[in-house]
Every structure is written in structure tokens, then in C-alpha cells.
Length: 318
Ligand SMILES: [Zn+2]
Image 1 (cartoon, rainbow, N blue to C red):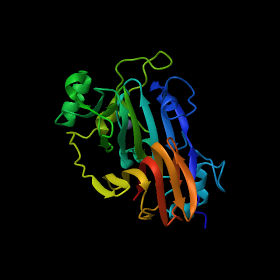
Image 2 (cartoon, rainbow, N blue to C red):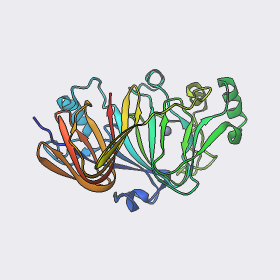
Image 3 (spheres, protein in one colour):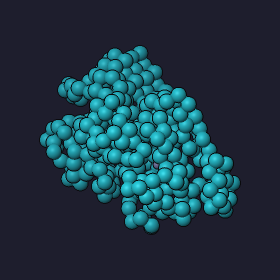
């Protein structure tokens, strides 16, 4: 039984709002000084990650999913469910909203809508995000969009490193300039832009807006979700479950030495190293981990151990 973790080659995507931190902070080979997204764990057709090691080296995660479902607990569904990205927002992303599964399937003919969540890795002093809106009803939302009352419509929230935001489908949102974020999301690339600051795209023309879809998909009124963090503190490790929702869970793991072995309670695990270095032990076999690594631990692993100084974001489908 193959228990080798699948280390992935990230896919890097240029964006008009991107910067150079994915190289300067994470050491990735970026295509330009406006690189916005690193798709670290992806089986999405718009950016499929390659497996770097083991028997499946050179294959994509999507191929592994299609041909070796036993490595993924025989998880149901045609498509790998999750996508992990690191985003470097040098300037503001568009104000946008994502559909839920039903809307995405009916209108875009894709399997998933997009519920996402953000862990703020680092940010500038005073950095903000747009999170939710002030319109009490869909009609009021439609009217404010029509009248371009962005200042009164959009809710701005100050952020600091270590903050976590849950962005279920239907949430009006924008990551703003100065934020470096790890995003865990459904494997989807469907975005409806409601406002793009009237700025030009790379071709000099404004990027398309999707006003009708945004109005149809926006949660009205916006209600802040209540999050309860579950913390497990050990002598040399701290495990914080940031989110447990119907589709996936996301946790922050801090390893400061020899962590106690962890027994599998997930179908399979997505792991991204935000900082530090150390090792992952599986069945007596060590695998070196360092900042910027993205990997999938297959379901054939029943127990793992971590060692070193490591900050990780770990997620799994439920
Ligand atoms: Zn988004």
C-alpha cells in the first residue's frame, strides 16, 4: 500500500492586482512582478498541479484522483473537491461574489460553487478587506449597485496576520492591497465581479462585470457567520481548528519540537507549510518539509508525526 505523501508543484498565475511576494517570501519561480496566485494544491483544469515525487511523479493531482481513488479514501465525485492557494494582493482584488453549488451547476455547468476561507499570513499595517454589505434586502442591494454607492454599501474590515475569515458562497467580498493570504476553497474558478474600481485590465479595457449574477447570488442581508475555534494544546504543538463546515475543515497547526503522533480522522489531508522547516514521519519514513511546500497525505496513511518548527494550514474534505 502506497503511503507516500504527494508533494505538488505549484501553479503560478499573473493577476493585475498581484505582486512579487510569492517569490520574495515563498521562493516560487514567478512569471512576472504581478503574480497574484499560487495554486498550491489543485486538480482544477485551469491550473492542475503536478506531483513531484513517488510512484506518481510527473502526473497531475487530477490524474491521481481519476486513476487512484484508493489514495483518496474512495471519496465520491468526479472532481477533486478542494483547492488551496496563496494570494499576494499588491492592490485590491475586485469586489466579487461566488455562486453556491446549485447556481454554479445550473448556470455555469461546473460541479462546484465556491465557498472559501482565508488565513491572513501577513499584511501591511492598516490593511483591510471587504467583507459583506449593508443592504437589508436584495432590492436594496440592487439599487445601491445601480447607483454605485460603494462607500456606503460595502463593509470594510481591518485585518492582521493570523486572522481567519470564512467566506461562504454568496458573501460579497474583496481581498484588498497589502494582504498575503492562504485560501482554502472549493475547487472552482467561478467569480462574479460586481465592482472593479473602474480600472483597466491588462489589455487596457475594464475587466468584465457580472452584475446580474452578483445580485442573484449575494446573500441579502449579509450575516456574519459565527466561528468557534477549537484549540488543542500539547507540550510541543498547538492545533487550532479554524473552521468545520459541511464541505471541509481547516486547521492551523503549530509544531515546536516533537509533536505527538496524530491518528487519521480525515479521508485525506491537504497540507501547506506557511513557515519554518521540519519533517513529516509516515511509517518510520521521514519527509522533509519547508516553507512553501504543498502536499496531499493519502488516505492510506493511518498515523503521522511532525517534528521541527512548522506553521501549517491543514484541510480535509468531510
Ligand atoms: Zn473570492
